[in-house]
Length: 311
Length: 287
Image (cartoon, rainbow over all chains, first blue to last red; front, side, top):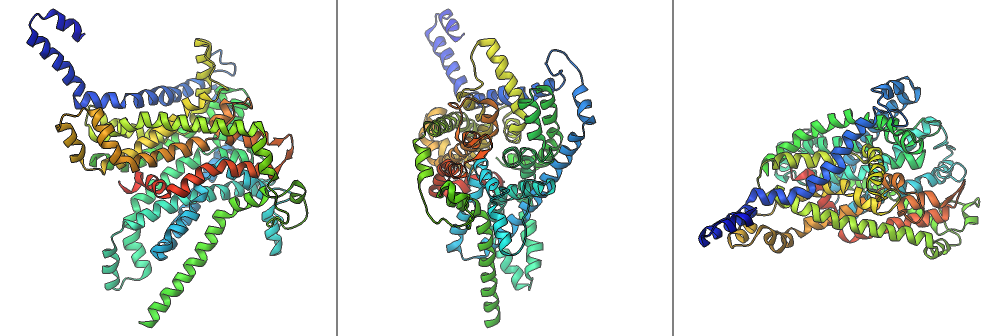
């Protein structure tokens, strides 16, 4: 467009002005900002937002995706016993695992923080290893540790006169097993977040409290916890989302078994949608994750917006 | 004075005892991985202690490293992770720069939107994406499903929002005077970003790169759903599916494979731990 304008102007200074205007337009903060973020916007629109809505559309189709069936897929799910088991298991799994991860992370962060600064790096490094390994591969190791005939964990239990435990063979133990592996994998994340939070508490606060004669519990309750509150909330909610939507640990460890007892939304959706070939039903199952994700996201967002205002 | 000092020493001893227990729990799987990988099949099924290697052997590693299949998985993983890191940085560095430096219409909403996208899990998107890729093939004739490059297209949905988000946090901590001086001196925005800003912001960018690599290397669901041919698999799925032959688990090889598969992120982490931790905590503690 600017080319046409320039050639229509016989006056050289006007042409220069027009060219300068175009250049100014492309140097403007808002234009450049938009262009810099355009690939990001396109990526989110095409590969995240569109598929999300497409999932909702898919869930209203029949199995062969030839006709619209409304909410029939959901109505069908509600009549299935397995569905309610999956709802229960997903919630039990996410809440228990996140609670344990938060408690262990909190305790370990305090322990690390209590040691002399010189050795902290070493402890931090070792304790963060589970979080760094690809979960699909480390879960394979857990599968081997839980092996029914050569279980290395049962061998240890036998040393102290306990066991053998049917780790992945019995429904209750299998549920515990996936939680144990998830806690093993995720606790380091809490540990490192809480450790960072602990470091950001000004030391003067503790000194003043110590002069005032505050005990260990009082310092924890009146200084540490209030100062860490935001990070505890954000980390917990974030982990709740990730744990609730977990796939690889459950898939490798139990594949939903025994008899569908350990399926969570993600693994059951995979079984129905990809393996079973019923894409609409699989999409319907995975959509049940949306409400809980949305609630957690709203809570996180309040904190995030506070931060965005400061930028 | 003596009593509190003694109390503190005991507290420290207890802290070390419990830290030791937690560290043992954290390191048990990787250590057991190594123990099993060094055993022969007959020693694995022998009735001796599973926690000790009597006749260590490197056979499992040799067999994997000379098998064409495993090398293909490794190569695919390297290519996919490498491409994803590049694509992610090309998209998220300018975006994070724009969102932390330029106020424009909708920039605040976009920053929030990036964070929300980062909360949309892969487990919600894999089914519609599967269908979309099939429709894309019907429309254009380009087959995406069952080619490793489909992963380069989908992984950025996981890495870009996260990397953008942690870089916004990091970039905001860099003094504005730095890039404003460059702009006043007549540099364009792109020049300012590449010549002045990125060199200073490099620690944040490296942290983001480590994350993009770790996420791309560890992803399991997308390759499981989108690739099936053995020459298109990446390590995470390749090890979990092909080393298990029908119902026979070749644990020595599976553990050796797992160890080799976990090695790249672990090595990066061993050398760049501080960047890794800085990136991990950037999102929360700078808030």
